[in-house]
Image (tube, rainbow, N blue to C red; front, top):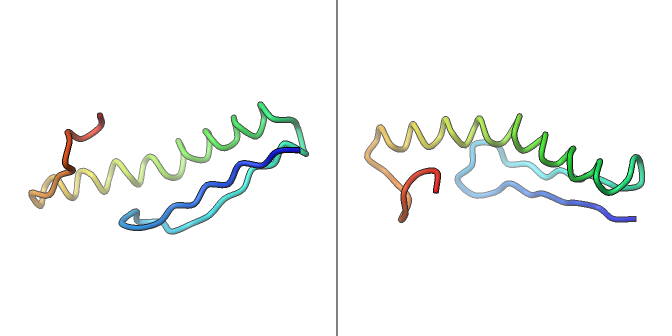
Amino acid sequence: MGMIKIQVQGSFKQQESKEFSAMRNGHASAVAAAIEWLSRQVLPNAIQLDHELHEQGDKPDGDFGC
């Protein structure tokens, strides 16, 4: 069965690895769990960090959020 591995590194505030296995409830469930974790844990922290960087005058090469 398949597994999704996500590793958060670098300038992200939380440095973490997470695994989602298809063994428990299937492949679609593993994808859904990964998306849920990213949207509830990683995305809010990333948005906060982008706001902090923007206030300091830092920005990515492209536009924020694109």
